[in-house]
Image (cartoon, rainbow, N blue to C red; front, top):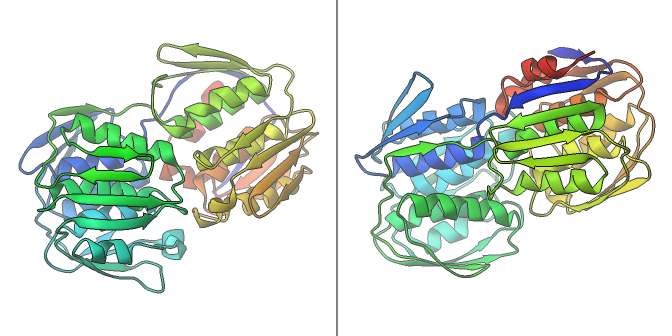
Length: 414
């Protein structure tokens, strides 16, 4: 779908979409909760979250979606041997570990760019913990066969913390206790998000330090109700809209969230935008914007919206820690640099650095390359351009934020 975004003044109030990252984790925990029922309010029903629900059903959960809520009756008793994770990397890497609890072969696959994303460093930890695993040259489909018994294993977290999240969810259900040592861990806040969720589900995990975990076996998560908080990752593009184009208020956000992308407010303030932190959200208003620096190691999803922000800042902004973005839906740093360059932006993508020189943005045509975060970032950049920007592939926002275009239209004041 080709969508034209014209230069606009932004003024309005929106509600952040529910967090797909939280939703998929809660879905997996509810699956593992034996025969207990978990009622989820404010659920994310974006494409990735729906993939998570379908995989949970395939693994034996009973899922009901009705009246704006999702109810999951847990129980690991696979009804299917082939599980389609859609385009969700979290879904595949996380349920890979969860599925390894089962005593027969299960194959997890996906579609589109997920089939090109690496499943690096999953085989050795699973084997050390009692399961077997086969990949297709480090790519999906991935076949696992358990059960995970527990034990001791090392996990490489350099590319993603998503497989570690799966192990933290699965190993409490193993027969024996487990010890994990994580090397090169990036995206640390996402691990804390998982641990926070598991604590609320009554699961005990001891974190000896930043990189070592002791996980008692023989546990089952259990909780009756869960309210999914707003998604700071999706809200980041909305807040950048306000900083670039006028004023925006985004409700439905937890100011005390452990989501990594809550840091967007700190960066916007550093860049000169007027930032008001509210009890249930945030308000951002345009002011004279200046260059900033940001280390994206623990918050890689902020790179596209911050690149859009940097286009409108005086001076040269520097984003570091972007090397891992080549393993996302696209090679994100390279693609965002290419597409913003097509709009006249001076931007350079190095191995681990993105350097953006602020200045006028012209109109033109760009592509999302099937990446939902790039699509939203290009729209945020376009509201401050000198002419209309036609964005090819805007339909891919449905992966995380299905109503993004409607919400954008609602806050465009002219």
